[in-house]
Image (cartoon, rainbow, N blue to C red; front, side):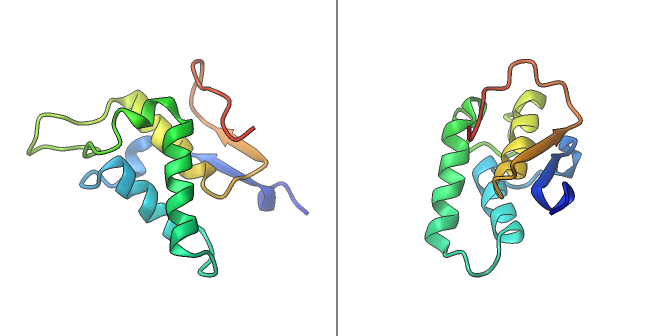
Length: 109
């Protein structure tokens, strides 16, 4: 096995879909990243697990990522957590991050 097959990267948050809530973004990426053999219930359970394990995501779960219509949007730190949550959906043994993660909790240990 190569490192590429066992790893994932967290990107800068400009790849997020601004019109979706945090939870919907995670669901969307779960459907894209996981094989079709994974059931909808398993995908939903994984999204909830990522939200609950990433402490910054629980507070912004239902907030639109970049809302121009409403005055609420997620912070850049929360956006970084969304990116990390997206990377962790496939549960890679290795995660490469291009961002400073000083306050990142241990997730999926």
